[in-house]
Image 1 (tube, one colour):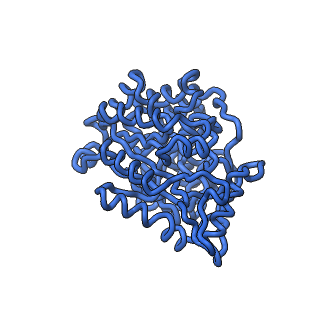
Image 2 (cartoon, helix red, strand yellow):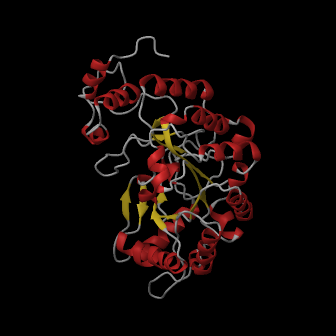
Image 3 (cartoon, one colour):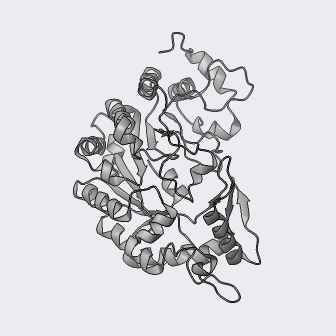
Length: 378
């Protein structure tokens, strides 16, 4: 615990230096909440004229780069339990900034406990917490170190400080093991004395949701694009176990890939480019049917981005996928933004997104775009 915590007056003074792009998080808050958020998130000793939310150790501001005008998530947390990820999915957006090798965080348990102490000490108002947006919390490291389990225990012990607890994973089978399942079930309902209990109860909102990433139906496609992740069969088994245990589920059929034929003169198949078919229409039908059968609250989607990995060249697969995108986009150019190449929006909508959304509409499955899913997590 900080021996010299900043005073309320100092917190308000520091708040005057907050970067304008983060200001909406403090706007229209009570004085007490403004002070608490400043005390927890802002660097107390910094002499910089403009400040951003950088102070916490493990329980961090969800995205320290995003303007609240463009990405209005409000006050919410992210706990990246590990660094890097051993799944090595070729399309991973986090490869643009995460290290190649998966690793534990030094002193993780002590640091997260200190953050929890600070949340309590400063009386920070409750907000959603996401595990993890940049690394799978149930990757193989978890079987040895159990840092995700410890993080969930800390959240449960400090439940008053959090609203929705959301986990994103490709390994639901580990989440369905008894010692984890008990934690997830306890997290699923806000305690009666929680400040948001009435709202959640009235709206029928769960206090916990697990988002399972399953973009492929055939093992061949999964092995090509998710080489280190659990198999399709293992993920479906884990989803079924969680469903039977009453754990609220979201299925991420994300990202969405181009499908044959690739428009051009003449039309081509992905095989013509040397790529396996990632998602046929039949694959998507089966994935959406799975979401329906498992009573998923909704499915999450977004078109695949071709991310330039941190400190590395594009893999051969991504170079080829970029050529597919160029053929799809012609005569338009690909969009370069956020260290990634993307299809022009009109092309992505017409060629990739709309056919998928039609399947969901026909089967009565709700959908949310990736960004929408995050922003609407209460």
